[in-house]
Amino acid sequence: MITGNVIVKNGGVLHLHGIASKNLIIEPGGIANISSMVSGDVINKGGELDISGTIVGQLVKEAGITNVQPNSAIGSGGQV
Image 1 (spheres, one colour):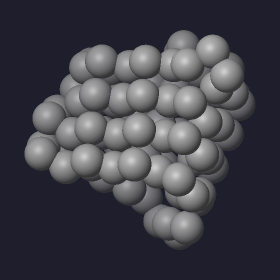
Image 2 (image 1 turned 180 degrees about the vertical axis):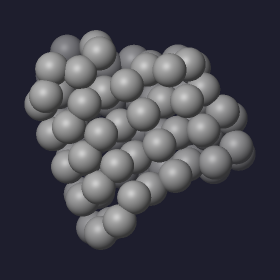
Image 3 (image 1 turned 30 degrees about the horizontal axis):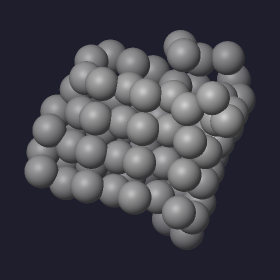
C-alpha cells in the first residue's frame, strides 16, 4: 500500500499490485501498469499507462499512451 501521491518519472516503471491511496502521475518516459486500485486520480502526462484494475477517481490523458483493458473500472466518469 502506498499512502501518498505517486509520481513515475522518466525511466521509472511501476507495477501496482496493491492500493495507491492518492493520485498517480506518469511523467514523459515513465511506465505504469495498474492491476489493482488507485483511490485518487490517474494522470498520464506523456508516459505509457496500462490499466486492468480500478481507478476510483478520474483518468486524465494529457499525453502519451493509455491502454484501458475491458475489465477495468473508472470511478468518476473521467476521460476514457
